[in-house]
Structures are given as structure tokens and as C-alpha cells.
Amino acid sequence: MANYRIHEHPILTIEEHPEFEFTWESQPISAREGETIASALFANGVRIFGHHHKDDAPQGMFCANGQCAQCLVIADGLPVKACMTPVRPGMHVSPMEGKPVLPDVHAVPEMWTAHTTESIEVECLIIGGGPAGLSAAIELGKAGVRTLLVDDKHRLGGKLILQTHKFFGSIDACYAGTRGIDIATKLEQEVRQFENVQVWLNTTALSVFSDRKVGVLREGHYIVVQPHALLLTTGAREKSLAFKGNTLPGVYGAGAFQTLLNRDLVQPTERLFIVGGGNVGLIAGYHALQADIQVVGLCEALPDCTGYKVHKDKLARLGVPIYISHTVLSANGEWEVESVTIAEIDESWRPIPGTEKTFACDTILVAVGLDPVDEFLHKAREFGLPVYAAGDAEEIAEASAAMFTGRIRGLEIARSLGRDVGEIPLEWHRTADILKSRPGAVVTEDIPEEEEGVFPILHCAQEIPCNPCISVCPQSCIVMEGEDIRALPEYVGEGCTGCAQCVAVCPGLAITLVDYRKNSEYPTVTIPYEFPPGTIQKGDVVTVFDTEGMILSNVGSEGPRTKVR
Image (cartoon, one colour):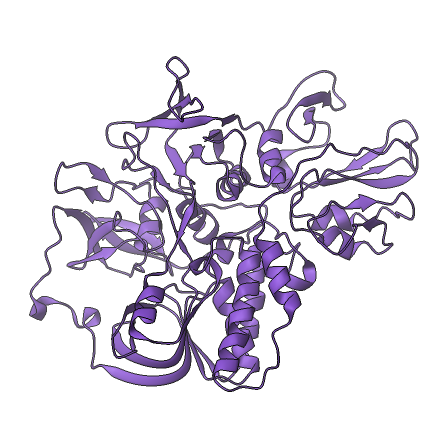
């Protein structure tokens, strides 16, 4: 079979893991230790996991987060979600053709059967080990609250472990300028230093009961947890979109794509089209380009992308066509995605005849928004169990905001349990609100007129919550009016030494450094670059774009040739 594993990445460290064999449709294929069934199948080029029992339509994967059932397969005789089930040596996996039929209880291997029910009591139970849950656990740990944190994945961090880009916000408040994968490590290390905080991975919360207890399944063991307080940090599930062919293998959510690519180091596609211009879709497109995946286009139904402009600009500079006021009409292909058709829409959101465009691709990412995973929240309230929510389970926002709402809920729970933690700082609430805020106004870039010395050019043209460039500048050359980090940073025009720390820390890759000190006519320009070093060689001729992707010139030492990456 084909091998779609990633062996080189500009950000992620590629580690070799032991390989073993399992069978798919009775044929032996390879897997790596710690992989899910879905990731192992994708790594071997398998994207059709089964067929629907009603019309025999091929089924693939959509969410890769356990929130749907589109990736159901039969593993050692039982129907399981391929995206959530670790693959094991010798496991027999096959498509689930037709409705799932449970085997006789006596035929189920012992490893699949739940053991004797256990019961435990904790002061606080946190369901979800993402940024909000980890941040809350840290505050509860500091307050001495006996806490149990459960997560259904094999590692902590939630969506942080999928995010190779640097965070926006403030360095002091939410690790701005640090990559999500590194923030996950920092938060986990801090949580695990508290003896009063227990962590259970590979543990699924099953139900909230009327007697105010919570049932969880931990690696085959069914456990009833009686918490004095329950915190839901269960995150969000991706929305789908109704269009012809939307269940074809190759149509899946942006989060699923990032899971395969950035967590499991599997290249799930060669030619990609993105539906949705929010931050999730824009960031996923950039992650694809870093993995040498061609992004053939992106469409957004609104008159402009709703994500941060700096994310949109990154795609535009790398040659990705962006179609605003367009919607997807169909995913085309008999058994898998072979192309996508989009069309322009009018003010009433109706496709305009004659504006159809078709792009050859093997994957369509649906990035059209998120819904909170909050079912347990409503059940706990119904049964009178003291319950709180933080992160996307409370309100869809950036992960930076989730960290702050987690901290706030942690202190609120500690106070409710009688701990003397003092008042929750009003500044925390204000910071959380700022981090949740949507992008603001777009302004014209202010390009310095002087052509001497060394100075940064700040390509920030939109009000978003972000200020790490101000924090890292050792000469305090970059300032921001007021205390609201949504204001635009400004270079004050003196004192720059050319250290380039602002270039390196900027989450939007929106700062360049111009240095005239060596040559007053031809300055040295330092730009952020997050691709493998071998993609540009000394002597190459490259096409240089402005901030928004308009061609400025072909630059190089070998004449007017053009080389566009």
C-alpha cells in the first residue's frame, strides 16, 4: 500500500516510532505505536472505511474527534470509532458493511468487557483536558482542591496539540508568541506538579445521572464518580454543511485534517480545497502548505473572510486563490472526492447561474463554524449538580480565551468549595472578554518614509487582541496606545538595534525588518519564513508579494526568471 507519512516538517519534530502489523480487510498493513485506527488507515492510503446500510454510499471520516459516527469500523468483532480507538498489533479491522450487530456477550474478548463497577468521590471533576480544563486544574491545584481531570484522548492539550502556529493575545496572559503545541506541554507540566490533581487519559465520560453522579469508562473499567462540583471543558464539535456529495470520503472537518497532519504526522491529501474563511479554515490552509500540500482554493460565503486578516494574507502571499461571496455546490466523485464545484452567491445567498467554478482536488475541508459540546452541562443543571463550563463548551472563542475562562472557573469552584482564594481579579474578566473579541477595523498600513538605519515595518492592519511584539522589544521601540491590546502597535522611530525579536515572535508573521546599515541603496530585509530550509536556495529567483498577495517583483541573482512556491 501507499505510504502517506510525513518525514519532514518545518515546525514539528519527526520521531520514529516502532511499527507493527494489523489487518484491514484481511490484508496486513503497518501501523505505528500510539496511532488510532483512522490515522493508520490514512497513512496507508485507505479513506473509505465502509458503506452506508441504506444506499451503499461510501463512508469515510469527518471529525476525527469522536463526535460523529462516520468512521465506524469493526475491530476484533466490535463496532468502534476508528478515530478514537488505538490500533494494536494483530488487530483485525474491517469495514462495517450494514448496520452494526453486537456479538454475543460470551464471544466478546475480555479486553473489551467492562470490569466490576468502582465508585469514587472527588471535590471537583473536570471533563476535558484542553486549554480550559488544564488552566482550571492549575487553579484548583493551587487551592488544594481534590480534583480529577478526565480526557478521552491519549494525551493532554485538546486542540492545542494540533496548533503549530504561534498564539495571539498577551505573553503574560496566554503565552502569546508561543506555538499551541508548546503551550500544551507547559500547561500539562504545571498540572502534573499538584498531588491533589489526578489525571485520567483514555477515559470517556458516559453520562450524568439523576443522583448527581457521573459515569466514566477508563480503559475497560466502568467507574462512577461523585463530584461535589463538575466543570465541563469539553470543547466544540465541527459543523457540517449540506451540499451534494458532502458525505463522500475526502470531505471532512478542518480539525480532522489538523489531527491527522499535526498530531499523527500523516499527509491526508495532495490537493485540498477549503470551505470557510474563519480562523480555523485559514490556519488549516497554512498548515497544509507547510506540509507541501497544494491548496487549490478557499471559498467564503460572506463578503470577506471572518478570520484574522493576517491569516488570510499568509494564504494570499503563498498563491492560494480566495473566493469571497462564494459557496460550495457539490463534491464530485463516484467513490471519493475528485473535484469540487463552487459558485458566486447573490445578496439573498442564492447561487448565481453561470458563475460555477470546478477545481480538481482529493479533499474538501469544511470549516464553517463550531458548536459547543454542552449536553452534560444541561443534564447536570437538570439534576441539580453544581456545574460550571469554560472554553468552547461555554462560548466559542479562541484557545487563548479558553485558558482565561478556565482560570476564572477554577477559582470560582475553589471558592464554592470553601477555599480561601480571595476575590477573582476584575482584570481577569476584562482580559477574557478582550481575548474573545472578534476582529476589528482594518486600516491602511503605515509605511515609514525614512530609508536609513534599521527599523521594523509592522504590517498589522486590523484590530485584534495581540501585543507580543511590544513585550519582546528590548529597546521599547514598539508601543501601543492605551492598555487595550486590540490597538495597533506602532514603531516610535528610534532605538532599533535590528535584533529581529519582533519578527520572530509575531503570531501573524506580520513584521519585517529593513536594514540599510550595510548598503544605503539595497537594504537587507528580514522576513518570517516557516517552511523547510531547502525550499529556497541561494541564487534562486523568487516572486515577491506584498502583504495581501499582489506581485511586487521577481528577485534573485540569475536574471528575470520566476520561481513561485
